[in-house]
Amino acid sequence: MAHPKSRISKASRGKRRTHLKMDKPTISFCQTTGEAHVRHRAFWSDGKMYYRGQVVIDNSSDVEEAAE
Image (cartoon, rainbow, N blue to C red):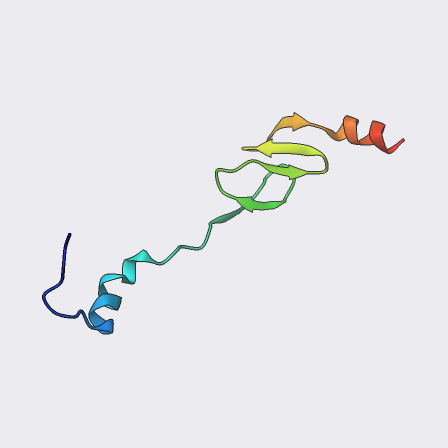
C-alpha cells in the first residue's frame, strides 16, 4: 500500500484537485415548446415527452381519461 514519506500540505492538495470541480449543466430551450431543459436529455411538458423537438411519448390522452 502506498505510504507518503511526508505530509502533503492543504495548498498542494488543493492545487491538485482544482480540476475536480463539477460543471454547471448546459440549459437549452426547446424550439417546439419553449421549455428550458438540460441538453441531450428528454423532458416532459404537458403530458408529452420531447427529445430534439419531437414527441417521443404521448401520455396526454391517458392523463385526460384518468381525470374524468
